[in-house]
Image (tube, rainbow, N blue to C red; front, side, top):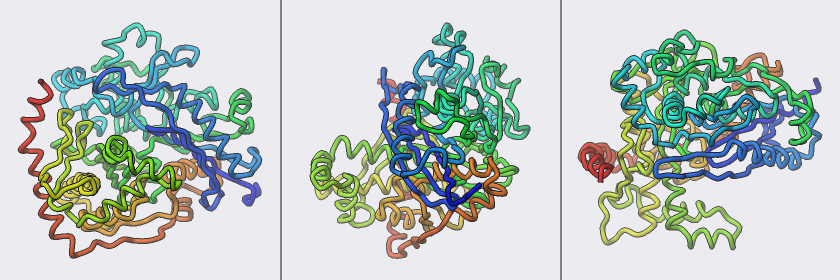
Length: 511
């Protein structure tokens, strides 16, 4: 194969849109295509998407990426897949979606959570699967469908995660990689097989789950029909890839013990590579299979950038209008305004719990809070306080991982849209008290998927070799010692605030 004419395509089915990125074999970004799709909220605390929207926008993103790259589609050697986790779709015998996908952010399945905790217990679930009993996880969402929409559940032939739905549309094959199965709560994490007995006790049959594969397995080839629709070449191999959490670990080089990345996008994930599953007696952190053999990911995730996006959409209309006129990103204007505020936002503290909170607190009743508001605060303070609040939330997880699990994190690799904000990166460094590593590519998810794909077809000897070659570090941002003491004081208040408000959150949810 002539490597100078070989390209890799990474496709990511995210929460807000589909992205396709073309890389050369050295990991250089050649082009990207992106298209948003809607989120459906038919009731409070519900969140859904139409899998057909995933496919339509993926088609558009692929066509855009290929056109921008100015290459022939037959120069694409392989396709790797990535996508949001824990957003199951339900397909009938013809592969047609029966109902919208229930997204990871959806909170409707609290009754099922309570039933599983009482019937089976949090400890059994955690020690078997590595995850916890929470409405975030796919096995709980599927139980909701079975109990509330039994006719649709019975008609379901196969349940697929978003990137696997795209894989099916490309290849006509059903599959699920083990790492994504692990993060869905389907897997016995030690045996790396479906937790058949445990799922059966919950009332779920693995007959509706697809075959398990490795993340580097070629799951099929682009069909003639898919080639005609997408413009790709028939027969192009498609590699399983994995969920966004796992492919980000590959794309950011988190492949050795103690390496960590922090993704600041819709969610805020802190992910650390470890050599064995970490079982948390307080169920604050979860463990997933890595895409690499004999490696695992210690994961703590919750809402993050969604809070800054909420602030943009609800309160930054002037910035949005100005950005349109200047052909800029409104976030750039918001960041510039927040930069004018001193570190600590003059004692304004934000709890980023707009959609409840997951790790390490796990409380769906929790709400967003601005604490310490005074007459001298204006919109700029609120914007910076959101950035700092998300950073406090990550610091909370770092403290637990280092002090209670004994996993030392030397530095943190920045991933996601938040990594484009120099201000947010400096806040992270100061709050975490650790260097923030800046990476050569902004598209770690698609790069990780492309690396898995290239490894799967033999372009690279293995994933580790490819990561060492393709994942580059461009800069390292050190903490500013002047700000550490101030942030330490505010961080302690941040942690204490939840404990003081916990009962009030619960009362508010019942009113």
